[in-house]
Image (cartoon, rainbow, N blue to C red; front, side, top):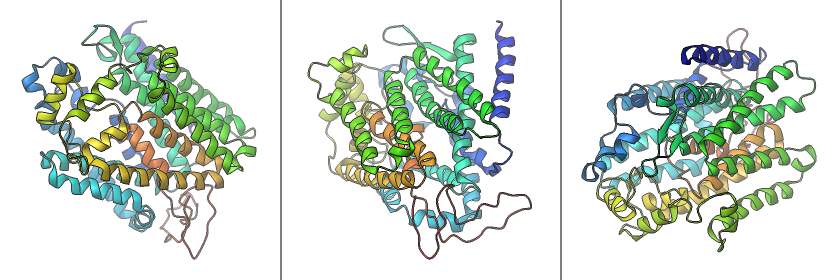
Length: 479
């Protein structure tokens, strides 16, 4: 098929996916497109790379080493302008919903504490202005999640937030790989083996995008399958079934074993735990999550013979990750406070890691927990642990009240914890981090002031910030 014809076919297919998945009974705000666009950019590539106005990853990797570290300091003015516009619109939306936003923020102390320490760490960063700009972007993740959770119908908003991104990113990735190799493929700078990135810049990023969008479609597919009396059941099954098939194909092409393993484990937890009989047994859910996390950790870090990792066709050194870990830990930095928010991979330290590992293009430690330690020290690790524990409590509370709505939150939580063993999952603008915040955020149920409604708008009570949660009065409960 000629690329031009294939493009038309895929555009028509994407339109069909949106039409098949529409639900006339679900009303969400048009402002939901703001976080969707945010996720579309984070799940693909920066706007400057789409327009080819800034340095690409491949260009950075081929840049002589004395200059390479400095390329990460400046950033792209175009990308900064795009982030600023989206963030400004998002803040304006939240200002119009300030009562609900204030109630949400009061219920999420651990998240506020973590981000407050991140802001404080800018003070001791070697590059405070760069760290400040990155913190602003990271705060944008919170703004976008707040827009989703304060929508007229948060349950439908979450589905559309993930589905809309998947309906665009996944088919376009297939289109690029099959018909536009100059956009969807590249070559590994060390082995010159073809690497498939789709709408992203590298296979690991494509794997992360497939992981998040795939879990969202799996959640919707399972919900439609179990809804035997659903009016549009077949249409929903077709739309999300097509995305799941594409996701599996992209996993195979990208060869991103971390993302594929997380997809299988988190998807399995979501499906098994949401069974009506098991959902009522909280201990069973705890054991299921613990087994997945512990088995993953043991296989990666305590499997002396590397049998489990080797059985997956992977290098026992985790494709050079152990060398990166040893290199970054050997550098002199503050173990208690860290180097400052998102500041470790800048300037002299980045150059030292490049010299020690003999690798190019490194921007992360390939371990989310180590990444937090390097930037925020043991204080940051402690606050992250508090956030994870408080977040898990919120996930389980929601799951106990509504297994269907809580299933995706449980899956995203498991993904973030396990994915971060070998990738920088707790990193600004990463889809895994964004969805982790969505999963762990406590949602107050009542009291929330009534918002004015237009004629024909969704009549869900304002106190019910999450569909499926009971409306209470006189106190705030979370789900």
